[in-house]
Image 1 (cartoon, rainbow, N blue to C red):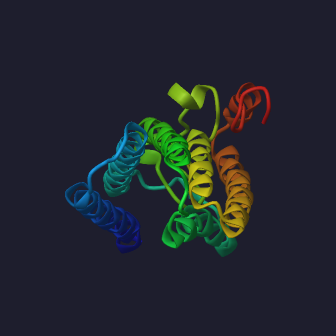
Image 2 (image 1 turned 45 degrees about the vertical axis):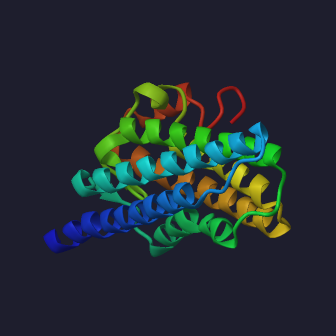
Length: 220
């Protein structure tokens, strides 16, 4: 069991650290190889894209760090299906990023980059508040009810969904829109599973759920 716990920290931590380093190299290449920026709009789109990539690097480094020091779970979801859904929800939007972006205008690139950067920063703030309770599979470690979590129960997912809207806008592809729809459905199922585990462990969870929104206050 101790070996399994260690692997549960080391493997995801190493994955996100490697991903952060790869994105850092890509950002360095982008900055080194950039051509002359012909006008202000093109320059703004370039720097907005760089800002988003930098935010992603910081976010991945935070994930790697918190996975390395996360607490042992008090309880985990009993089924393999819940883990499959969680993994699919975590990584499916990578299909959009692998496909690359369409030849969109600088204005669209700016809007997409701002949305993606905003979503990433929001997720990073939620991650810092979640801290050592971070997990991919539905698991209960401790109940976090402060900061963003005092208002909404799943702020990291909200940030990821917001950032994913920017990815779809940048790709301008029906396939990307379909992947995003599947991503949202998977995340909703993840919320169901996570809330079920937390409710089974923490007696105060029902009261917490009653006074908070799942994602958007007053709407959902």
